[in-house]
Length: 337
Ligand code: FUB
Image (cartoon, rainbow, N blue to C red):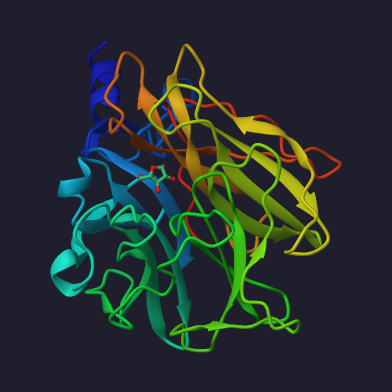
């Protein structure tokens, strides 16, 4: 009896990271006493939305929107983890003080690293026609910043093809071309970026913006290549409501055509509502995929009550994405290989 109690106390150490309580196994513990280690959802405390996940070196990084009143959205925090379970917060990696033209609604980072620099594209000001704002780009020497405005003005200020300049995603194609997909207000454009991300480059037909909006698209575009196919994902519904969700299409090119296949992430009355604006992680060198998204805890009504969660994303044998099962327990530890 005494030995059992001792084993229980020594084999299971309770740890606290952020708001997540979980148990750590001792390798010596018998299988019957082993506790499964999970990240828990949300993966870190606080209202954070639109999470953009990426692997830099041997760490996972998440760059979210600070979810608050537009007037208070004047900075970005980011989070890093060696294993998807233990997260470290990096505060105020970019603030409006370093972006002369941004005065509210700093939203939805899109991040990428190139030539030893780290870039953070963002939306600012919830811009409408005739106003200053839109998509900006910031640069840093380290993933955790500090980031500084790269060009001193918006990269895209105007509404083109009906797309509000927000929710940009930077996509590196197989041939080394960097594209940016972006757009709110139910329209999505694709543009080509120049080598140092200071300007857009015209396509061969001299146009700069190509609309690739699929059926039901609202905002939050994301793209990846798997087995040679282009997967295009986006959010549908209104982000303040329960029906926010994620759908996708598959095509042979980043320009589509993108025929909507269906939803893969949506509210679950037993877990959360308003699940959307996601990104994906493919653990390097593996076939393991995760979806990183925000959702609204049950019972919450405030539009800004959005928390960042991670769950597994699984493909069927034909390459289609299976509906995501949202969980409270989250994912198991997964060190970057
Ligand atoms: O967080 C602000 C806005 O809410 C984002 O830009 C949209 O995608 C929606 O998630």
